[in-house]
Length: 447
Image (cartoon, rainbow, N blue to C red; front, top):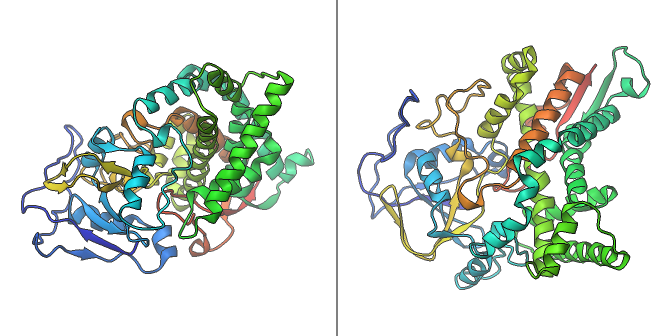
């Protein structure tokens, strides 16, 4: 993004207010600015700084106006909504469409070379009736009962990965040992991707290949060659596995078998199977990888909160909700576009405009959360938007929370002393403003 401009709005009080009984302080009053001379806020010039801490920039947008106009490096105009009340309402607003094929056609009419990912068709990039049909095929696999049934499998994978990190366990000794690891590479990434592999029935030995495809798709920039190659390779890979199963009449009890059965019933096309697998592979691990990394970093930064959590590990489910709010693994919801004019806090967004909903900004809104920039693991003012909302609310939310709860509980129990093995300013973050996650997290583990 190159510029962020506060959208013109009338000089009126902020329309939203804290919910009843929340005892939250009011947000700072928005700055006054003239509709004919909108205020411009320049984001930080240093991308690593913006990636490592986007919240001051998001706070300025939130305080300045209900809507800001962004211009991408490719020249596409985007309207960003940063306030909690507005974001929550917009997540369920049918006037904000997510049909990626229509969105791509609209983008092509504005600028050249913008790729919104229309090559992949899945439920997150579709609206009803396609969205309803696609979600119905897989939603039973993510019910509360089915997710709880996965607990033993997640616990098994977690302990196996921790054993690999723990040299003392490998030597069957209890004496004090120290190991330096990259928590993202060695634990946070393999855990959810191995869970997804078991869920889908995909070969776990190819997990690094899945990560390469995922990175190429979610961090695409000006050159879309890597994106297109990843989509092509993933599609060929998935359909090849499907063809092998059909030739061998191999139907294991996994989600890929369910997808192939839906194709036989005429409910899915080949492209939709590929899109569904891509969504589950990418969405099924990206959120948890990011959440595990940022949660561990937050605990290292806040030893008082770590001590509170260690005192009673059964508090972990409450803590996970706060980790999701404090550093949302999805900073920006997927791009929407208006099918008719939409009024946000007195600002009218015209029809056929692209809109971004800032989940990260909403979850740090002082009008909704008290002292929002602090990590408070026993926070009472709950209600974060980390998993979105409306019909597109993350289908794997329950599984992601289960994985994080099990992983962090086991990690803290196994390694009571963890320290950062580098300077914090040397940490590298994912090169995308849509996701919020670390590339690496070097830790020294003391046992």
